[in-house]
Figure (tube, rainbow, N blue to C red):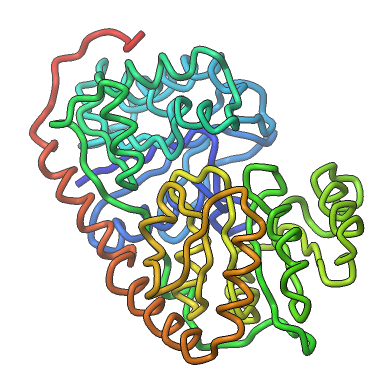
Length: 398
């Protein structure tokens, strides 16, 4: 089967799949290719002279749509029409027309469904984040018409993949027909993320790891605040710009100022962004992963930590409330509650028997429930069900 992954704003970088949506699209594409499918990823060109590449055996086609530079998600909409037109020309002209297209994020969906209607290709949509939920959680990043487009898109595509029960309920509230919805979570690369192997050096303190962009919604500031209740632990934050650019980063500066204000500055270490292949070393060096976002549609880092045998204390939001099983692989606390977070960290670090039980169960759950082979198999079933839906070419979605 020919599968086109439409990932307008998540491109492989430096020979390795990027984090977030890039990691999801890359790992899923590789798993589908390993299962015998013919997969291509279409992403927006973000560098002058950037040609097509192959990552993990999957061709990555870089589409000239908009300026050849990175853009935030909120600025993509004006270039989506050009992206779609390019897809139509390519699918009609080079002899490679996909059996099904799978779009990732809402702007990718607009491009895919418009191209699909003109070429007869059925479309599967993964949002990865919904504007309505982001707005309700005060982390919305425009444009203002995004929730309306997402609502129309959910009714225009052939299937919508929800990654959690929370996202599925949100989609139903938006008016997406229940018959078009399927629940398939994200996965973890258990060939990369596993408990055996080297780890980053550490001192005598217990290590709490926090992973993600240095934005308020990720909750790093709550982890730093919680550290006041765990005097024998350090917090290591991995994410944001590379280490040599941290001094000029506003988010890093705010976190450091907060740590000094709480008198824990000597126990808070900002690492910056690191290549994905190095992440297992950081997970293995930690006693706990603390995933404390205020809002998180799914969240890959808890799964990666679990696959490395690291228990997770997470906020009970989005997909984290489903990947982390309370009392089995970790503990859940309310979001924006540093006191509850600190209490949970202190209790788990102080209970070595429960810590070991969580670590063992975390590995089993990550491997058995969230392997990419399993996820790719579930999605293959969705694609197969749509493979006969060669539609009559028509117009754009909006």
